[in-house]
Length: 139
Length: 139
DNA sequence: CTCCGTGCAAATACTTTGCAAAGCG
DNA sequence: CGCTTTGCAAAGTATTTGCACGGAG
Image (cartoon, rainbow over all chains, first blue to last red; front, side, top):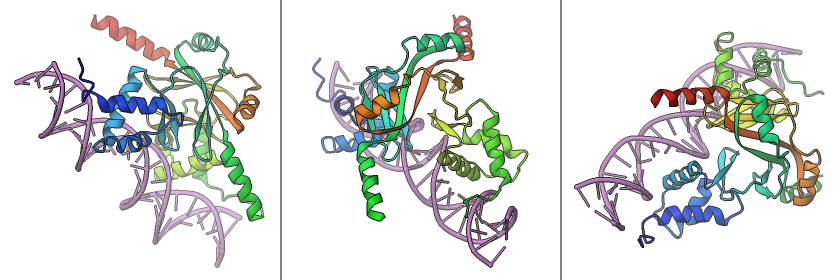
C-alpha cells in the first residue's frame, strides 16, 4: 500500500499547498506555487483537483474575486474580509451570524439551508496606506 | 459643471429592468429581456451599463453564481439565499449580522470596512420537490 | 490488461474593449 | 460642435474538456 510515491502525489501537493497558506489563493497561484517542485504539473490538473476537493467538501471557496475563484483550505466556520482595492482576502475568526439564522431562513423561505457565509468588504491596511501616500504626494 | 451624464433611453431601461425584477439577473437575462423593445441593443452595452451602475453604487452584485455575475437592483440591506442546485437567488429580508460587526472587524483587522454581505446556500423548494420526485420515480 | 490521474491543447463561457458611427444638448 | 453612448466584433481571461499516454496493481 505504499503507493505514496506516485499515486496521487500531485493531488496531495495541491491540497497541502492550499491548506498551508492563508491567502485564499486562485488556481493559478497554486499552479505557480507547485511548478518548481513539479515542473510538469499542468494548470488543468490544478483546476481538476480543486474542483474535486470542493465537490468532496474538503476545501471551500470564498467566491469569485476580480474574476478569479478564491479557494480556502480551511473549512472551519469563519468569515472573510475582501479588499475591494487589491483583492486580498483575510480571515475573520468570528461568526457574526445569529446561530438560529439557518433555521430561520429555512422556515421562512421554505428551503433547505446547508451553509451560510459572511463577507466584509472594504480597504485593507496596506491599500489604505498606499492610497494615503498617493494622495499626499499628488496634492 | 455638474457631471450629469447624457440621458440614454437604453441605459434607463437597463436600470429599470433590473430594479423591476427580483430574480437577481445576469447580464444576459437583462439583454434578452430588453431585446424585444430595443432590437438593436447590444450585450456589450448591457455589460457596460451594469458595470457603470455598480461603480456608482446604484445597483449591487450578489456575486458570481455558476460562472455568471448576478446583479441586484435593490440596494437596501438584506441577505440572499442561493440554490446550489439551480442557481436561483432569493431575497432574505433580514439582517442576521451583529450591527457592531463592521466596527469590530475594522478594529481587529485594521482595515476599513465598507459593507458586508450574508449569503445562505442550500436547496430551494422547487429543487427539493423535483429531487424528491426523481428519487421516488427512480426507485 | 485495466484503471485512474495527467499533460496538453482545443474548446467554452463570460466579460471587456477598440473603434467608428450615432445621439444628446 | 464637443462630448457621451452605442453596436459590432474582436480580444481577453478564466475554466473546462477530449484524448492519448504513463504508472500502478
